[in-house]
Amino acid sequence: MRIPTVTVTDTPAGEVEADVVLVGVHEDGDGLALTPPARMIDEAMDGSLSRFLADVAFEPKPGRVRTVASGGAVRARLVGAVGLGPAGDISVDVLRRSAAGAARSARKQGRVSMALADFGGDRRVETQAVIEGALLGSYTFDQYRSEPDAPRTTELVIVGGDSDAAARGRVLSEAAVLARDLANTPAGELPPRELAARALDMAEEGLDAEIWDLARIREERLGGLLAVSAGSVEEPRLIRLTYRPDGPARGHVALVGKGITFDSGGLSIKTAEGMETMKTDMSGAAAVLAATRAIAMLKPDVVVTTVVPSTENMPGGGAVKPGDVFRARNGKSVEILNTDAEGRLVLADGLSLAAEHEPDAMIDVATLTGACVVALGPRYGGLFSNDDDLAARVEAAATAAGEPVWRMPLVQEYRRMLDSEVADMKNIGQRHAGAITAGLFLSEFVADRPWVHLDIAGPARAERTDGWTVKGATGFATRTLVEMVDSFAAGTR
Ligand code: BES
Ligand code: ZN
Ligand code: ZN
Image 1 (cartoon, rainbow, N blue to C red):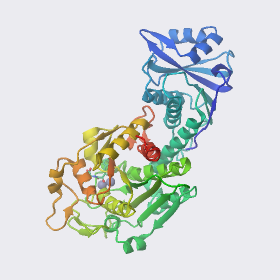
Image 2 (image 1 turned 90 degrees about the vertical axis):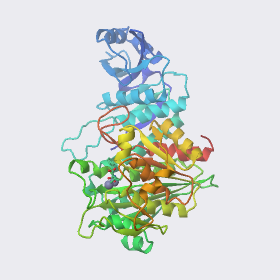
Image 3 (image 1 turned 60 degrees about the vertical axis):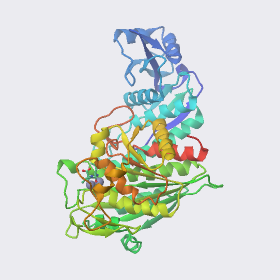
């Protein structure tokens, strides 16, 4: 999707040339409390905005909007009142949600201005959240429709916003949009070689890229990636992007993303319904690639190595069979008992490779288990870690990004559930604790480096439009990764 340009201005909201000006309104007991920009516009309109809102019994819940013609009293054709919920309770999440609703309601207007009132918080954080909400909340993926939803907003003006934060908000939103576009693209159009080609395109801006083809993947002994790809006519790819700061680096972070461009389950085949959304099984890859691009634009003082093992998981004549054993990059042997537990097999090699670069921290992102969705539902990602400091750092970044995660335990007693009759481990546990045994499996490949695993099987997709998410791929974890790398650079939490 093309996203609007973003500018900031100190011109009063009523004097900004626009198709629509959006201003905030709070709940105040049974009545409404206008924010200062809304009050200013209401005064210019001789009170007709507040009379209109009273007439229609506007309830200013976060994200609700009512629009009225300005009648020429201000420089915008339309005035939209945006609900902000109760006064005095303006969290960054509420701002992001309200901006998303506001931008969706105004999506057919070309030039949209949003007035940021003084909510008493950090103006930069608020500016960034409003832009993220607006740009992500009005996202559409309509390139396959004969009649796209046009015209669309081309310019967003933030009245009273911070300009550095606006630029940052746009970079982060653009990255999340890129991740959504990749994950929403049909699997038939985005096999591993195409995902690799898109990663190469991204690398034009300040990144080194290396792509391994099948022959190289064999040479490098990526046994997990080879096993999963065996049933597909499409060749696997191993994608590696590297970002290096111009000056001295304050650390090195490795990002690893699950890049299954379609998960049919393989011979342990899924049901028809179970594979309906499996073109999005590369959402982890999309998040790490898009985040890496944003990092190359924001230029923090941290080296970032991004590794994406990518393949289809298909039940072809050459497919890997339950009972087959392979040796992963790090030398450990794995018995595959269920070919649908394929993400951990490709991540085994991805994490092993990343660990060889000796990073200070490793984060993998994967739509890994249905069990994690059972545990946490569609909104929360599962966070697993062998390092409390790193876990806290990633949690803080996720909270800042409004991409909530919940830490889950890596219960060492459950490691025996992965004991195999014939190999070092098998690729599935028992019925219970499926997200944890998947995490324990991955922990065998991190070479004791500080590591976080994000299981995003739930929040990678939204089943309905709500807040900054739109039905379909969400780009979840993209912004968390960028915030996390930045906090690493700043040495802050
Ligand atoms: N890609 C799926 C996990 C998934 C499920 C993502 C639902 C998004 C929504 C993964 O490869 C998978 O199939 N996992 C199996 C593992 C099981 C066989 C141990 C699962 O969760 O059922
Ligand atoms: Zn699977
Ligand atoms: Zn999968």
